[in-house]
Length: 170
Length: 170
Image 1 (spheres, rainbow over the protein chains, first blue to last red):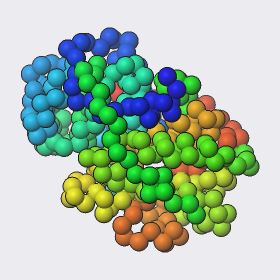
Image 2 (image 1 turned 90 degrees about the vertical axis):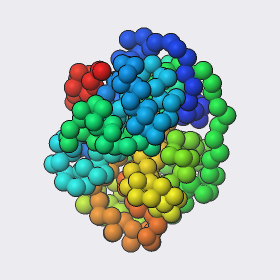
Image 3 (image 1 turned 45 degrees about the horizontal axis):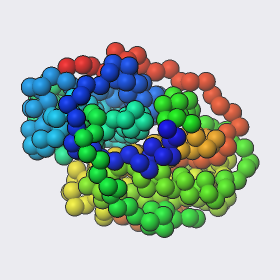
């Protein structure tokens, strides 16, 4: 699948089939996370792949009870790595690390779409509860939860701003 | 080009040819920015496409004198849109908006690579100076500067952490 098509056709998937993801595709998703750019190549990011049913349920509960999250075969909890980002100080921790993680997520989402998988970028959750469920400690900050699985329902495209609203030329 | 190849082969480009980007490719880049996911579909982001030589020079200077920035035919200044993010409060402004912008940048970078263009995610710059150069005011926060152009030199791949360092399974 070409990149432009993947970008335009990817949707946020909130309904998943009960079907496991083959290991070689999981490895492609991981490679996508790894090969996204990162500030100063510090790679200030860490990803937890959760497939344990009980842990998935607790994560869905921490995500303000968004039940669909736990229906995916895998939940990827995407974290900023505070220690790795710290050479750049506050800017590293509060800006670069968030960008590092986000670039990884977007790369993974597009590769997932290419492989016929669906994903959803979930930002609404209780940070402390996610940290407690996974025992993250102070050095990993969860910044997104991404359920990944084969889509059971593909929604219509969300509305988008026009090119003239999105961009200004100077 | 398939997505996985684009993710793995994209490099940070810091040397550009003196060659303009056709309008239809610029439009594809803009579509990539637009079609990236965003929290609550608020699309808390705005992009300034700079091709004016004088402004490019001032931006390179604001980017701690990284001269290569102004050698690209276009510099995309990527901003969080504070007003659009504010329905989600501080979390919207300090987390979701940064993720919205980052998802857009990554989508644009991959489409750019597919089109034979090079990009570089520049995070080191003086925010206030960039704001002043573009007259951004308080409602747009510049969070990345991305020069875009045809690569004059493609560097070797940067080192990356292993899969076992990047990911933990639970």
